[in-house]
Each structure stands twice: as C-alpha cells, then as structure tokens.
Length: 339
Image (cartoon, rainbow, N blue to C red; front, side, top):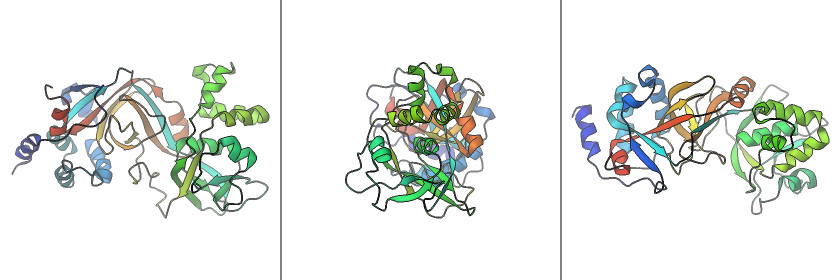
C-alpha cells in the first residue's frame, strides 16, 4: 500500500474528539496557510517528534509513529498524515521562553553554599515559601539534594522547573521537577512593576536578580511574595549534551520543544509556531512539555536550551503570534467535521 493510499485509509477511521475543546473555535487550515512552511527543516522536526512519538498512548498515533521511523522526507510525512488545526479560545497569542539554568552548589552545606534544594516531602507538602525558607520547617528531614549559593538563583531555577547544579569538583547534578507546594505562583516582575520600581518593558530575569541583590532586605520580602515553591528530583545519569526532562519524561530539544496547555494541545503533537516580535520566526516544533503558567489555546513557552546565554535569549521573549497544531487527519476532522 502506498503512503498516500495509507493516509486516505487512516483519514476514514472514526476517532474521539479531544477533551476540553467545547468552548474553543477550531479551524482546519491547509499547509499553504502556514507562513514559511516550505522554508523549515522538517527533517529536524521529525527527529524531535520521534523522541516522544512512541509514548503517545492512543491507537490512532501508533501507525503514524511506525511510519515516521522510515521517512526520508519530513515534509512529505507531515503533509500526508496530518492537517493543520488552528485552535482559538478568544485570547491573543502569547509566546515566552524558558531554559535550563546552571547554578553553583555543593552536596554538603558550608559558609558559601547555605540554601537547600529540597526533594518533595511525603504527605504534607503545602508549606508556604516563607515557612520553608524562613522558619525551616523542612530542616532535619533528610530531604536536601544539594545546597546552593544564591537564593534568587534558586527561585528562578524553581520557576524554570529543571536545572543543573555545578559542583566544585567539576561535576554536576541534574534536577527535574518533582512537584510543588500547591500555592499560587506570583510574578516577581509584576510585583516590582506594581511597586513602581520598574516599567513593564524594563523587567527581565536579570533585572529582578540584580535588584534583589542590591536590596537584600526588600529583596527577601519580594522573594517571599511568590508563595509557590517547587520541589526537585535528582535525575539519573544523563549525557550533558541532552536537554532536561520534560513532561513526557524524555529530554527536550532547544528551539524545537514547546511547553503547552494540554487541555488544548495534546502532548507529543507537532505544532507550527509563528512567533512575532523581535527575532520573529516560523518553525515546526513539538509539544513535549507543560508549565503551571501556560494556560490557553494560543499560549506556549519556547525552550531555548541550557545555561546563561539560553537564559538571556529566553528572558527577552514575550511576543505575539499564533500556533497551529498538526493533528492526524482523522482527529482533525473529528474536531471540525465541517472543516
């Protein structure tokens, strides 16, 4: 059976509609509607798609994933077996960036490394950030993975949800997200704007960190303003060249992985991103991660990689645009039968 014939057969298979889309507007597009589609490296996107495709627990994806392993042309593969689906919930597109921080620390505390990085405690984990950091409610329970030098760097590591601790002997500890205390995230940047210290366009991660260090007492209060506290798990041996582990429990890829709202975008699906603003680009990415602040059909976080330079790039991104999900043909038409 030819690939084109198989694509036609798959399109006729009845499939369930994605959950959570009752209030969304769904429009099936053509690949000609995607700005810059013919200029992307589809083969690179196919490789990232294959990293997590077999983890998709859905019968309709299985034959597509099997075929994906044999493709010489990524563009042909995506055009044959998928349809671009624009999902909108009435909110404008907003795209930000995230990265994997690297901060200095040690396995044991000393005069320099004094701030613990905690595993998630069993049972009660709902302590506030102030209780954990000021009152020390978790001390003495053997939950420390490591200790770090800078508390504001630790909070930004928590905001990113993963990272690397660089040890004095040249080694490192890879950290993955293990849960949170359940308290609402409060933006430090928004608070500084509210306090009249900065205008919105002036705020970045670097600006916030600098202000906290220059104003230690007020800076400490600012950090406690964000009650959300993230716990980590130490990841096993991972090649240093690999990205952090995302929501699908696989390493994610710089500038090809998106964090999305899984209510609207299924994890593992290819997503065509058209990012506006400074450094505008269009690129085929893969939805391989999530984030507590990523809510909405046209909201996503772009993973920029590991380290300070990736952080500088990620911190500058707060741009408009649109994202279009590529869904298997049968699922696309199930979402919009009249499309």
